[in-house]
Amino acid sequence: MAGILLTPGPVSTHTGVQSLSRIFRISVNKARFIVAANRLEAANLGSLMVVDAISKSSHVFVKKTPADIEPYLKANSDLCSLSEYKWKFELPPPAPITVKMQNALVGSGIVPAEHFKKQEKRTIVILPSDRSPKPEPDLL
Image (cartoon, rainbow, N blue to C red; front, side):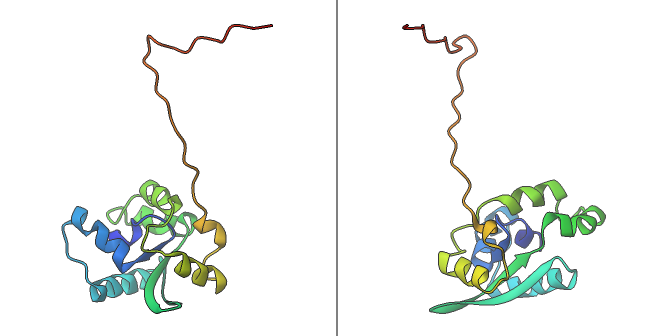
């Protein structure tokens, strides 16, 4: 169940969890994903949906926002920590959440469009401590 909650983004699919299965060292097939997603839904942590994305349909678990599940995670910290959930929830969705699936989820009003916004790529330059940048000389 934690694998579903810890996939990046506000939604999770079987293939997204399957990519994490190496970390958790468990095998995740579609039936197992559906059983786990139903348990999370019963605990009021999200909703399992079947999304029709033109050529095929997929089971998608739509996660509740961090604010909505905070009380549950505080009481059940063995599942995952609230800070870890918040961090993963805010990440862009993984590749298994295709643009067609995103459009279907947003178009049906299940997920707000802002949940699928791409984060800016930022370049961080680390300078050695003995080589701090020197100000440019004034040319005027």
